[in-house]
Length: 375
Image 1 (cartoon, rainbow, N blue to C red):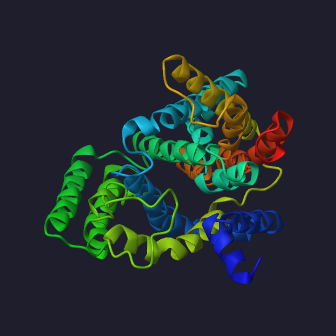
Image 2 (cartoon, rainbow, N blue to C red):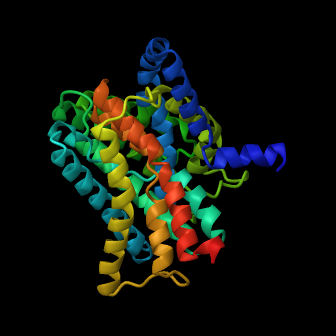
């Protein structure tokens, strides 16, 4: 693999994130006091400001995929992976809650959404490694996108970052949406006004309202002009594309990689000995809940009349369920939203990091079931 291809591969699969996470783990276990000082200083600019652009790029995929010609248009095309995403979130949440109550730690129940997460980039990487070219890959991508879209809703509804001020927050958000609408109506075709005006007001609306400001661009991106047709899931817009959404992707694709590195560095530094009930609750819920929830919801959907994609069978679906159990980025983010600094947060973060073991589970399941490259 040439240097350029290796660089593009690393960017495509967000491999800078685990590099940042590994650096954080090493640093935290060598000198926790110095790591804690630096991570505390980075927490606000990275988690509350920088991650705005990560969630914006994730939202961009949803916006394009739901446009005419996109992978989620019309809704019938996305029905089965969308239902699978719901099942793949409900089962881990239920298992997590049952686990912490069985362990007599009901105060950890606030972390129920952590195992609901699916990391799009890493799940995509594992799916490609197992299936190469197969309908299971776009199915898993659609499932992961739907999972992240629902995750954004959960984050907004259940994880406020401060006292809720619904009136002030709602008024500011209406102003943000009106600003974005007027920009669109006046045919503004560059993205900066949407970000600098609508996005900034939206950020203050969420911050003032007590919701997580990292979601600031989520309601603004749908107003940006975009191509009439989507070239495909996670297909980089061609250099000739001049619509606002494509320009946004061109300009922020690489800076977001730096943000993800800093996110890993800021949030993944957990002393290795800092494991406990929250760790095993997250790991158990995601390793068991994802394949069970996805499998059960798809089975019920098929019984109700929906059909599996062509060339996909139940063995493929079992492996997809295992691959969807890599929570990593979003699980880490949910952990930081769910718990304040302390032992519970460190335990939950370690569980989010250990969710990468789902990759090994997916590979093992594929080998046993003779799926994909093991067929």
